[in-house]
Image 1 (cartoon, rainbow, N blue to C red):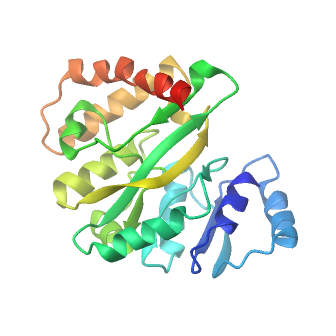
Image 2: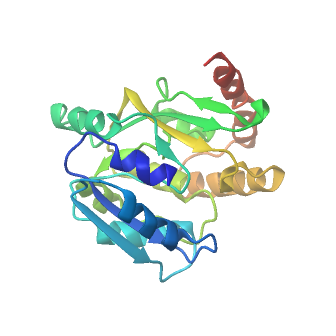
Length: 241
């Protein structure tokens, strides 16, 4: 309910919630129904979707098809907006700067163990960093629906790196622009598919290289592997914060 409550608490008045269940075994539907009964949510629209295909990116694609709003963002299970004004700040940022196609913020990874915590600051991220395997964070990325349609759906055959490949299309192929906003933040719980040890690091590195090659980037193995120890800086940032 943490995720649902963080959405319902948003001050932005016109939010459409599309919840896609991929056949989970943790009583997601029961929790959702219980939340509906208990919640005093004033969301503009709430829809439950039973996933027809297989995989995380397939679920994201199916959800996008159901949307009718002008802006799209994804909030995965157990993730939460940091505060009640996140959506309002994102919409104001897009409204007041017609030249940009998306806004994004920072990500904080929460865990009982300090070495698994991260604070991912996106303030200094730039599109050239894609060639090093870094992208603007997908959690808390608010993109105009028109831009999403131009970029196209996520590649469903990828296990972890489809959001990176999608960002390559967004920035490199379509030439779209996005802006970092200070007060956008998503809090995640550690243990996601990209944070499951050595095997997940191998998969994501392979898929990032595949995405870069497909979009004409010169792939450097050194760049892609050196990004991993650099990510350790996020542990220090989490301790400081």
